[in-house]
Length: 314
Image 1: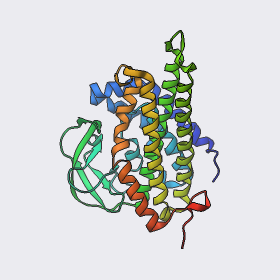
Image 2 (image 1 turned 135 degrees about the horizontal axis):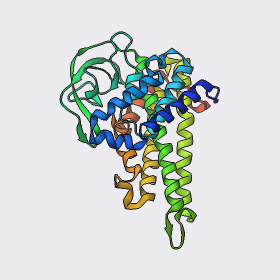
Image 3 (image 1 turned 90 degrees about the horizontal axis):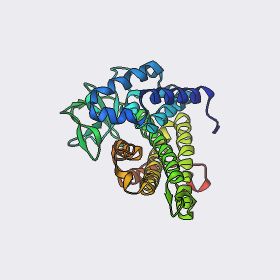
Image 4 (image 1 turned 120 degrees about the vertical axis):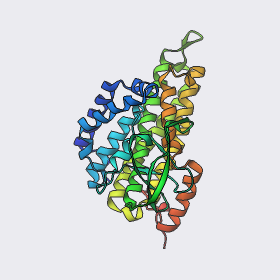
């Protein structure tokens, strides 16, 4: 694995970041909550970036560029299903969502498209259509119930990429959360000095920064693994999701706590970040079921890692 990203992928991520800032940065998420029709501006910005021509399945460079796009989207809580659109079907153009195929599936921003491909992590896929307007629940402001209409084909590679690109989106959210927390504690004065001068606060921020750095490397490694051995990379994709969920729990909790009571007020950007991250954190399932699926995947396909103790055994 080469840890250096391709220059084109870096440039694409930077361009995406500038485009999302021009949309209003985190204020675009606020505006979309007040008026869901505002999301059409996001779709136009993505089209201008050339996202319609970006296929994460087309090789490692394309997958890394998609990862940088998702990271930029996570930084601003972009109100749009970027991962699902990146993995739209070449055959019918339907975007992809991961969901258990049982009763009452929910898709983030499911109302934006007339139909979706729903794929289950354990295998199987269905076509689904929106079944009502978005519901403002703990799953996020745009969680939309959908109705399964019948089976459909789906490439297992799409599931691996969806899990990994969603982890990349969470990475961007966590990076931004740490930046917001650092800015806040640097300017917030208690007992005559910035609270960033207190050792306990420094320890909390250090732990959060380490978690973000570790997730960044793991997302890049997982994209490399998927490109090199897609048939054996299910364990890696589930592992990066589990790592993203664990890091999110630490970083988002720390960031909100450092803001005090203001951390749950929508006047502050950290609150917007946390609320809009909920679909990525909870769909298709949370940490406990991810861990269960990971154990089953390791038993099925093994787990190749950077360390000898993680290698597949006969």
